[in-house]
Amino acid sequence: SLIDYTKEDLDNWLNIFNIVTEDETEKLKTIMMQKMMGTPSGPTEYKVKRKDGNIIHALINTVPINKYKSNIGFRGFLLDITYQKTIEKNLRESEKRYVQLATYLPDIVLVHIEGEIVYCNNTIFNISGYTKEEVINTSLFNYIPEDYHAVAIEEYKKRANGVNDETTYELALKSKDGSIKSFEVRANTIEYGNEPANLIVLTDISQKKIYEKEIEENRNFINLVNRTNPG
Image 1 (cartoon, rainbow, N blue to C red):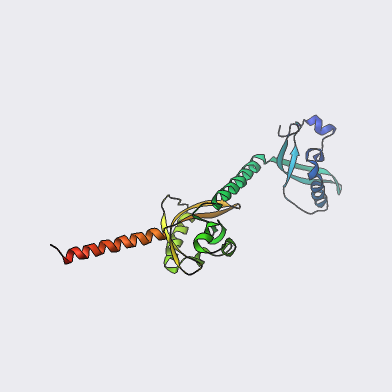
Image 2 (cartoon, rainbow, N blue to C red; image 1 turned 135 degrees about the vertical axis):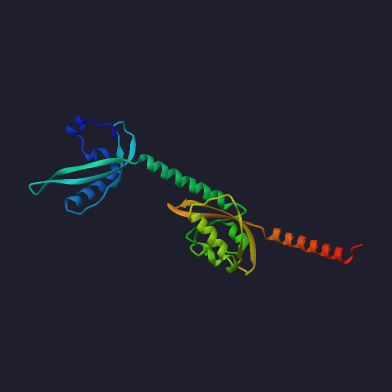
């Protein structure tokens, strides 16, 4: 029922070369010859033609049948993986759309795998002065001041242990010119390139921190004046 051929089809004319698509026949011939020569191999992915003409993706594994020290045929199995292939395709397309969106966000978007940066958007240059080429495949901790390493490690461990809460935290990054900027960070775990990864979005709050400091200094000054002149 998987590919809709009948036992009569199999008895009369059907063989494995009739069901794989034309562009897969050379690969099938090569693998079958290798198995006849005694080279082992596992299941191989092929595009397979159903009787109604539709194409499915399948894993096919064949084993030579030997009789009187001669190969008289093959036996094997076919496993439909069309659903899995569709999921993989959708994931790749979703990842591509996300990357296209992230490219133009005003915040810095980074993806790292165990601390190694594997993706960053263009905004990193506007804010930090580093180019994407300078950042990719380098350690995230190269850009985090030592005072903030403990915070970054703690947050990384939370994600590694499956904690994906909605809370934000503050982090500082070193710009290319040596200046330190403050960021509000939102983080989550994702799959990137079929590997578990960490997505972090950094919103520059450096100007906000300057305003907060000025407000605090003004408040302290007013309190001092009030204490000095109680009347």
